[in-house]
Length: 221
Image 1 (spheres, rainbow, N blue to C red):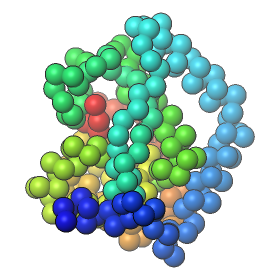
Image 2 (image 1 turned 135 degrees about the horizontal axis):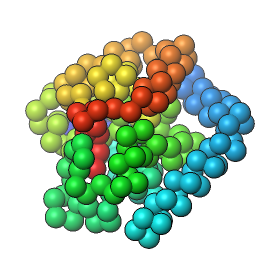
Image 3 (image 1 turned 90 degrees about the horizontal axis):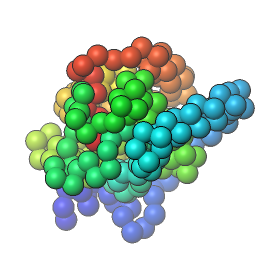
Image 4 (image 1 turned 60 degrees about the vertical axis):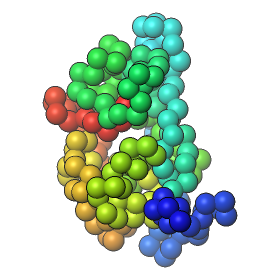
């Protein structure tokens, strides 16, 4: 059995049921997402429409980018993002982490990434149950395999649904090292609660409103 299979006991057999500490997560995610849509629905529609139009006008390519990520128990899902890079950005490089002022980024993409607006479509992943509003940031399978070889136990983050926001993003920012990310994520999993999720959602929204500097984004390509 491989390390990835060991981290994915439900492969082929469905997702395991939530534990006592996790049972609040799904109702919490749906309630908070519904509240945000009710209170700011027209704003979300206008913002999403403007972003989609800007992406199409710039290079005529697809608006959304679907990327394989590891979900709960190692199940692979397609995470949605607004496209921020040129089409076929990884055809020559393969899976790599994105860098600040990445040459593959589009002009619109740099703005979206600066304010984390490229993450907005992930609310669809939340509604589908593939992600949570708060949790460990989902890694790409190929990159996670590299990390697993150097950071023992990194796959333990997969015991809960991945999230849009999280303790690692709030405390360490996006370039946080894998071993520190694991420590923050395990700390969150041990202490997660509705109150903590509310605090982290608010903290990450505030962080989003402050554009980050040159060293603050290596999350994904």
